[in-house]
Image 1 (cartoon, rainbow, N blue to C red):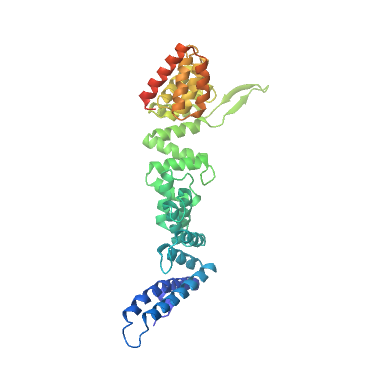
Image 2: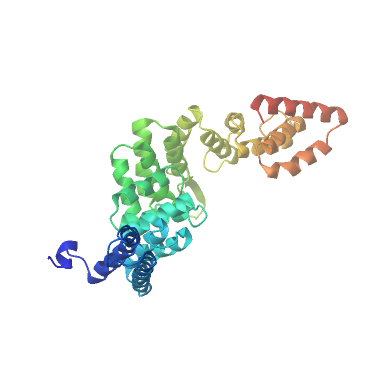
Length: 375
């Protein structure tokens, strides 16, 4: 008969021992039916004796597996987790199974990390936790499990989790992006822009956004690229006396161009950002008329910040022919109906400044707009 080492291949002694112990737990479960089938033969043990023998063997195998797991043998921890998960030789216990999967996964068993990820994603033995599931998918991917890598990337690209986890996760997403996946390319820009799992790198972020903006004309890519360029820090030029001569913003012209392109495609974020930039006169030259036009375009799509800004402008008369409290009330009311609780107080303040006739008119206008937008 071949030695155990040759049958199991080149495995560590601890892993071999754990596999054997787990096999014994399952094998012990088979002895009862066999003994019962042969109990009528001469010299064979009685049914009760066979059951007692089976139970003793099963308990011995369980004890050996549990002892190895408690000693810190990672394969035994995984096998004990599987036994508890499947109810193999012992009562099924998803909560305790997850504890052993977590230990084995942390100790380098990829299959255990996969089981932990599945448990957190499905809520087996614990509450559902997509972030924790992603952490274990990432761990299994680091340990070489290709399926885990694919699942982790799916969670990131679908928005289930925000972080790339680390350099390995970025590498997996880059593989998908290299195949032409636009969502992955945009996500890489966001990862590098915001430092989601890796250190921020604005040059890399700009490169990914620029690639998508040029090749696909995607409004979101144009918006993100324009926002980045417009937000680039400027520098001050002074004359010989130290007086400010000019404030230069290197990304202003190109940033405006990309934002306008996205805004014309109906991107409400780009419309709002352009409106704010023209209104504030910092990133772009002040232009109240252009600001009002772009903010109204964004507000027509129920952009919450655009609604609030227009309400403030209408109340003060900025960008309009004069103060217009009825218009201000309508904008505040739509913002509040869209879920912006910050609009509640200024809406009531504006309402208190109206005459009874104006109140009735303002409420009717607001109701008409809400009904038209399904709010």
